Length: 109
Image 1 (cartoon, rainbow, N blue to C red):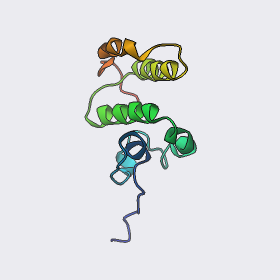
Image 2: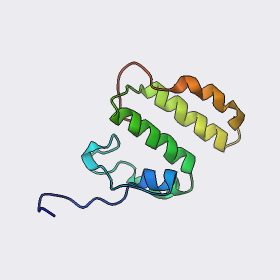
Image 3: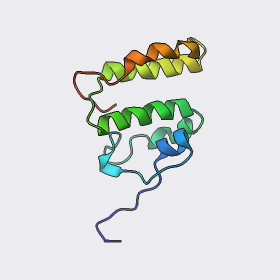
């Protein structure tokens, strides 16, 4: 390993959402800001794989060059939390089809 390379742990989002993970992409990640922005909520994510899946999906969309508006991300996140709290049913999942990649300003969430 070169001296200028940093050791990156496994990606928490991938590990929680998928059960396996690659190394953290570091600065290439949409959730990277002077380090992983999700470190503070890592323990909460481990008990909420559906939230980790949503965040991982959003990250992958952004990394693929798709535009994700802040409003779209908030809507998707709110839906997941409402299902978890029993406010909405998962049967309404088909209604999420319209929440795919959005046009508009790109904003890391």
